[in-house]
Length: 295
Image 1 (spheres, rainbow, N blue to C red):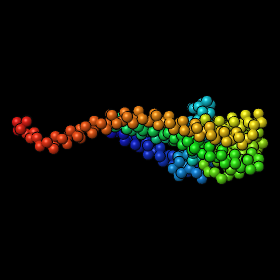
Image 2: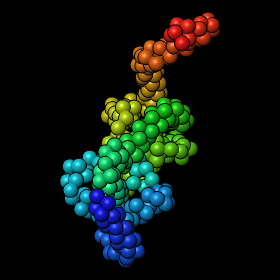
Image 3: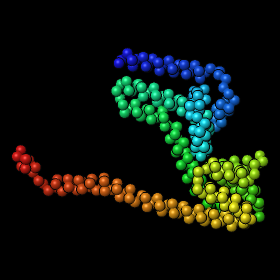
Image 4: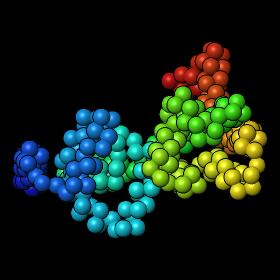
């Protein structure tokens, strides 16, 4: 067992030196992978950038193993997350390769040492660490957009009612906002600048965001454009509907929280309180427990 463990450690050391040598080597990568290394280079951290460069040469192999359908599904997830830290599908594949290798080697080492729980933790780390980051970014981004949208619509309605065209008003108001919703609007405006129709640009906006409120916004704009309804009335009514939906969602969350809190109280707090009160009563009564036990 000791000899096998030493062999595994030696293999790991050799792999580290080989990785450093490959990292420092001037490898010629395809153009799209070189571009993926540069996208978001100012937003990603030093550790993530190092992992990306170590695993980028293995990204094509990972993407081939994933298959076209899974690649398309994860590309959409990354879009929904807003490309956190400059994440692209190629960077995702590179991180999956590196984290998978680290988790697999660590799992084997701890299995040889008989530590099954740690081995399973390392295996889960290698398989799901990148997924956790994407899932968390999707939730945070969706919540921020849905909190921002009603106020944005109110301001946009005021600017449009002042006489500015919808396109100019959208550009003026979005320039005063920061965050994911402002980024999405700038992307939409840029697409229209490049020749995409307004309907198609807003359809792409809806596709990039898995949010019911964004879908309501795009649908209302498209229906108003088809029916010739005043845009100001549409925006004001939409903002009211969104706030009403937010209030209903808040009430539903509160209703779901009450049974959970009740379960926690009855399961943990009530028994602990009863034990504490009983112990205090017994200790305060001055009972001689030695006489009861005959000692």
